[in-house]
View 1 (spheres, rainbow, N blue to C red):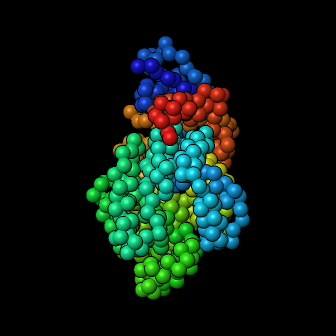
View 2: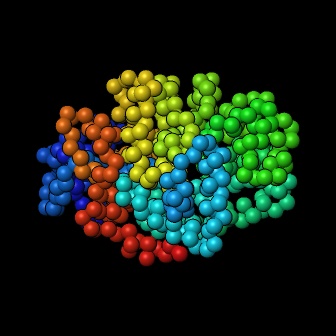
View 3: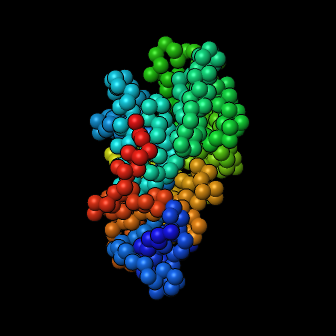
Amino acid sequence: MTSRIIAADWIVPVVTPPIRDGVVVLEGARVVWLGHLDRMPTRWAAFPVEHRSGVVTPGLVNAHTHLQYTHFDEVGRGSYSSFEHWSAAFGVRYDAVLDPLDWHVAAVDGARQAISSGTTVFAEIVTNDEARGALTGCGVHGIEYLEAIGHFDRRWRNGARAEFIARLDQPSAITVGISPHAPYSLDGSVIIDLLKIAKKRNMRVHSHVAESAVEAALYGHGDGSVLSVYGDLRDEFDLVRKGGAGVSTAAYADSIGLLNPTTHLAHAIYLDPQERDLLLRRGTRVALCPRSNAVIGLDAPPVAAYLAEGHEIAVGTDSLASSPSLDLMSDVRLLAELARSQGYAEDDLFERLIRAATTGGAKAMGAAESSGFGALAPGGPADLALFAIEVPDDNVERALVYHGAGHCVLTIANGRTVYDAEGIDETEHIAQTRGTA
């Protein structure tokens, strides 16, 4: 088996301390050795060494994406006063898609954009099945969470459930999960059923929770403002008909079983300390998406509180319908700025945020221990990213957090080059041989 040896100014394995003047050895789809260049075993002495300037990290883990909306970037460039304002603009653009194949084209485009910024693992929500297969077609990893949205109990029982089961039964070359869109956009009975289906099929779950400021009013006393996009149908939803559940957002999510170790949440902005503590006790992880929140006109995620309270967070970009780019390190940088402005002064900030973009996302998806994603270690996946940045003060994590965005020059997944700024890119070949259409 051919060995590939990459040397760089720094190697950041994440699960072990950074290595200055390091080297990582790949054989096939696995890492077989990493350490200091001058200590590399002689068995690889005859192989050429690729000397690259910069910092090598594990392939990044984007813990919340909707790649099928990559071509909705004009929506993402808008200015919005609220979640409901943005939802209306998004709905107009969604309804304008006439060719279902556009979903797949957009998803592949989005995957390639994210790959070019170092991402190799995705928590990808799929609303329209034409978007499936983009990740495998581009040679990267992840979970395709098939989304259920807009189903009240009667609709679910009268055909929607059978249609969703048929989606799950379709052959897939990638791991499939389930995404109950949000506790407000599905009746509680529907989410309970989806969780039973996920458990029976051993599937992971991913959902949006506490993204909207008005969401809590629905759970508390049945205010259906967050359901305005459904028009008159919002009165069909159980929480509206019953006048709410009289509980907080997290308490409601917990009451229907959504808070558990096999589920991770996107956003989780509007939760108080007691609600965040409930997430922690249930083992439910959170993917923060700060740039998306800013575009939509939401409050910033309470990242300082999450860190201070002991959460091991993940990071997501969301989609180009609500974010300037799919460069995960841009969200990491904003999280650092927010954490400091919110009062988090600990020295571990940068290390924890690099973990959030790697092992944090992998753990949220259940893909850290089982698959080794988000880390560089012997026997682990040959997934890595190279960032062409300087590290002036030996604080390599700080340099990555503040300067990694826009500076990825090499991405490797499964031991294959899927992006190289110098022009060597196997992504097109992978897509052709696997068939992405």
